[in-house]
Length: 375
Image (cartoon, rainbow, N blue to C red; front, side, top):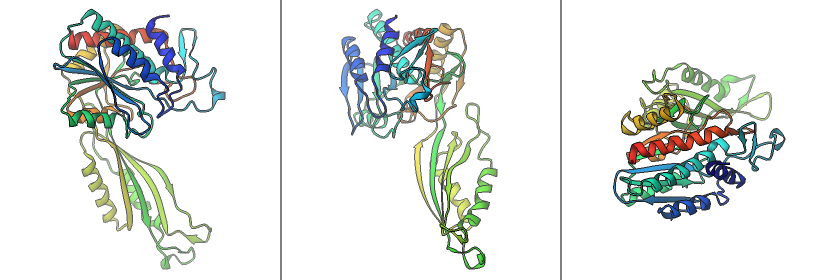
């Protein structure tokens, strides 16, 4: 068993269900300290974070990731204990195998090999690790970046080990993410008897044409790297408690996933103008998960893509697909951010898995990126 595979298994054994870290960061810190990194633990609330840096000069290259995992779900759907790594037919099974404990192990081993071979590498190397990516994501990378920004410490290049690939390791390199903006809406009406609708104000009737227009409107056509922005309702309810009574309120939650054509303030204004044009009486609260970001095709993107191709033989597609990631907290600082990690087909599912051979290739990709950026 290789060192990288052994470390992946040791990380999986630690039940780090968000926001718990369960000692995963201690394993990482021990190895990084031995490799000459200065360690700074940055806990916020129940969340463990650390920032490790080797060197003081620029440019600053950072590996970022998370030790927390989602709950395993129904245990009867697993073929083995989700927190006891098992290898069957060349496949490693366990919660976090793909998201993203194999990436953490590969980053660590690639880094320790790199600094051993190149102890006087150019620039500086850093790790930004949190246990709050799968949860609320309010006391993890977001807080660490606020700390770094406040003291003028700036990341130039960042590689996040999120599972990015679609069918084969190497087929996708993420260079951005869509923004995510949620609305929590209450449409106000007036309760009444169903037989006398003229004496009431049914919020369902008021909202129906608005909802239809929201789905019919094209927000944009996307651009070279982003698909068209989208709107989806994820929850809607209205009930007066009796079949012969129209309700006095409708409650809904909706979400925009949007490209760099928009920012959240313009999207809010556009939505509220539509509601006002329909004469809705409403209360609306907003929750911004993150603005979209796009890393330009320059030194980091080109270097990472070349490293992936050199190791895997596949020229990766440059993508902005998927949901949100902690890249949304790092990119606004001016850092160039890419994401590269395992195939994501089984993440958050029972029997999460990664081919053992992919773990070694992942380590080799990260090493090749380090050589290109700091070698």
